[in-house]
Image (cartoon, rainbow, N blue to C red):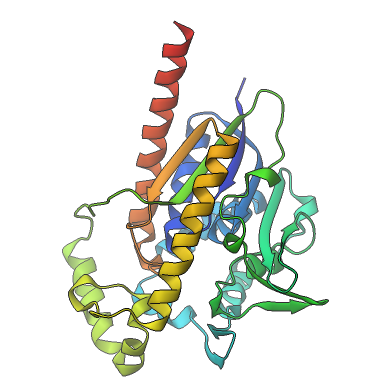
Length: 300
């Protein structure tokens, strides 16, 4: 009989793609995911699984290169964010049918933040794609959603690890994936020669406009000595999420915590999806092994 799992997926930009590897690991090990709650990218990945389209989403993101990611960023000159955030949803709509959350076979909750009323907004019914658009509206980066006296932004602002919104079942395992861990990280050699050449060719063709937004694509060799506005905002947001995540994990004490270092990649480095998914798979195997070893020790 498969072990039920209540799965919580954190916010964290492109690092959240590693959560695909964790979900695949759970399934391969025979666990049954009964409920998912997520913030921001965690809501996105969890939503794709609950919709039954995780493999389609995986294929989509794994075929993105730097130029593809750049094309998906619909720039605007709004004072509330320089990305509209509609193009990604539009691109997904071409490939996948939207679904009503209440019709999913498993419980699902996506978390956003109402910045005007200082409260969390939890989507457990209605359009999945609308919930994802609201939950991933990074403050000052992606335009928020205005609706019925609310201004909805990224769920990670108030709750980067929304454990309290997962629906627990008897004898389940509470599994949390935290892609904002503050541990060190050394990137393994992953790229093939062909991938490196293609990336180099793409960067040459992205022109001056790309350079204006280089903080979206961190590059250690060309990193500015001084923090720019958006880099400063992102680091401030990261620090806030770190503190909230520590408090949440200490309070709820999950059975398994899969940690992925925040130093793995930048917020918009979705072109590294294959590498990130493999990283998630490795992190899950290590966490599961630690859990089983602790269980054996406690049983003795």
